[in-house]
Length: 163
Image (cartoon, rainbow, N blue to C red):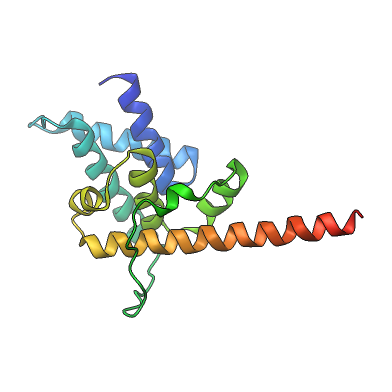
């Protein structure tokens, strides 16, 4: 297991937990599980991501802090998966957006933006319908657009106050 793989898995853990100490614990637990396992999978990264995700869900259930969000059956689906690429967010806005997302949305955003997975690949990796992944990407797009709009309004108000 190389350093690049560990860093990638740590970023994935951090994406899920939002806390460095919790991310370190989650990664350590996953690596321990992998080392104790008799069978060594061919795709260690995918296997470890699955272990991390399952452990995170188990931990959330134990602490009764799972983000449940009802799906709006009439919400429009994200038809263009690349439309988020056109939104240029600054670092602080990305951090703010990250705080507004639930764990499932953060995971999808991580796999899409950092790992470069397509919606179909994310759906396959998570064992969820592609429509669910597209719906999450759509909600992320809406939240990011709202944040950008609010920041633009703040900037315009600040610009008028200085004149």
